[in-house]
Image (cartoon, rainbow, N blue to C red):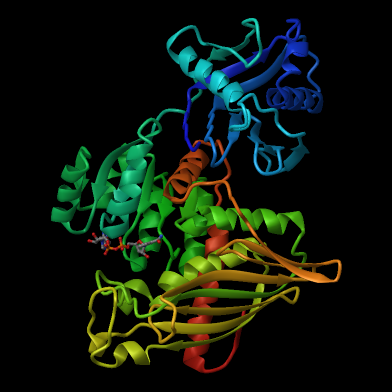
Amino acid sequence: MKYRIDICERAVFKLTLDLRQPFYPLLCRFPNFLSILKTLLLLHVINHCHEQYFIIGTLAASWTYVGSEDNSTIIYGEKVILRLEEHPDYSLVVQYKNGETVNYELGKIQSNDEGGQSSSRVIDEFVASIVRARSERNKIHCPCRRGRSISFIKSEVPGMNKLRIGLIGVGGIATTRHIPTLLKLADRVTIVAVSDIDANRASSVAAAFNIPKAYQNYEEMFHEIDAVFISTPNKFHAEITIAAMTAGLHVFCEKPMALTSAECEAMVSASKQAGKILSIGYHYRFMKEPKGAKRIMASGAVGNPLVVRVQAIRRRKVPGWGVFTNKELQGGGSLIDYGCHLLDLSLWLIGHPEPVEVMGTAYNALSRSPGQVNQWGSFNPDTFEVDDHVTAYIKFAGGTSLLLETSWSNNIKEDVIENVSISGEKGGLDVFPLTVNYAKEGMLFNSEAAWIPGEEDPSLPQAENFINACQGLEEQLVKPEEAWKVSAIIEKIYESTNLGTSVRF
Ligand SMILES: NC(=O)c1ccc[n+]([C@@H]2O[C@H](COP(=O)([O-])OP(=O)(O)OC[C@H]3O[C@@H](n4cnc5c(N)ncnc54)[C@H](O)[C@@H]3O)[C@@H](O)[C@H]2O)c1
């Protein structure tokens, strides 16, 4: 049976556990909740709290239970984030606000579904009582019998109001990804306004999505919003980010971060000065295979990465619309537009080592030849000024090397090849499909993941992570310093192409 339940309760609660109540033994019947309780007790010890009550502080509670795909319960707290994961290795992850993460192993979580989803009823009941509590007594029943309950006393915390969002540049990606995704999160955000240099476009998008305001000049909406989504051509990412940061806004900026490393540096420094979140749209990190690969890397199964192969290759798919082939507005072609995603993913997986030297070669002979077959619209070969196929070799401090091939258009037999393949000292992995390669008992094995938790579409987790980060509930996954590193490498690949030699950092 495949079903899915998404319940998100984001009201703010103050949690007080009254341990004078004799419910503790009853909780033993429910190992998953018991684990949370144990952790809370542990936190109590860590915090040297000597009160009669265990005051956990203010909780901004967010509970998600997704049967059959990603069974997890998450509690966002003042000091910690508790994540109870039920698949695949039954762990409780406690993420402290200072960045420290502690992983507690649990026994197999008890199921009270007959042969069905693990522990669904236990959590369902719990979540249902949270939802009920919203409208009723502010009292939440934990999954223990005989009506015993834990009190969540509702309190207000500044910053937990809906995030007011404006979008700048409302073309393809804003209207197909960001606006529809943000509308799904209407309990957490309000889209206040859109802005586009093309005034007609701004007003028609506002009308189509029922957004109250439309501006041509983005600065006019700054006073009425908390955060912006920037989806303009690449050339404007830096200047708009810096303007928004200066106005005290959080910024989600589409990829690539900017055209040059110097622009990225200025964006990072503006974000530091403003003390606001800056995140970049490297959405591959929110896909389930990469998330699984990150866990494999963290487990040590691959060991120290030696050689990384990155492929982001399309056969005859130059985006023939918009400004993708305009060098001035985009800064390049296949590498800066498409290769950047897989390059970012690979650097994240290997822990962002420092690059030391780059050798790159960029091509566009194919797209500059007249009469090309192209699957994604048409373009003028005479004015085609960006790269359509790029290869690069990158050396990192510590000895890891990375081979990159990216292309919008070439003559391979496959339609698309997208992969990051890491060969390490202990084993290897491929991200698409997620496979771990290793030697055991004198034999060689490739084990492909049969099931990976997570969403098919990374848009929602990406937006949620940004919103959580703005509200101080979660660390942002894509940090600007990391996206800057991607842009710095891309810049060096182009520089190496122009010079015809390798270049050092
Ligand atoms: N994450 C992804 O996979 C992904 C996919 C597509 C595009 N993108 C990125 O999103 C950005 C936009 O791409 P797109 O495909 O939506 O392009 P698009 O051309 O469809 O839309 C860009 C919009 O920005 C507006 N604009 C141009 N200059 C502006 C300015 N100075 N101020 C305000 N608005 C301005 C244009 O009028 C247009 O409506 C690019 O940086 C691109 O790399 C990311």
